[in-house]
Length: 95
Image 1 (cartoon, one colour):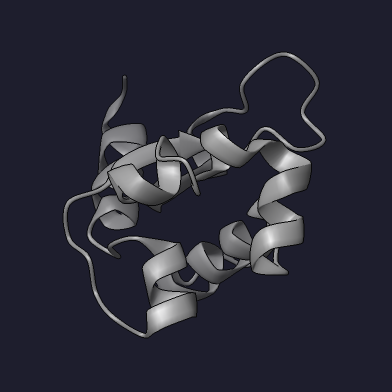
Image 2: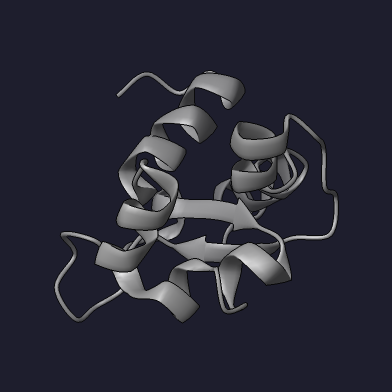
């Protein structure tokens, strides 16, 4: 991992869980970095496709891995892509 990747990951992780922000309007600092999978095929995206999620929203029953990509969208009414757009907006990345 190079310096730019490490810095990006730190900035993203510092945002807290993006689902907690959207759903509950709260900051949840303990996060895992999730690679956006929707539309990526079987492989993972690179470090620029990372979304910070708490354990519950990452690997929990109502998380992206627990519900699956389609189930996640159906349950929350927003997608991984929407969350990644939020991340980019908050850290000032222009897509």
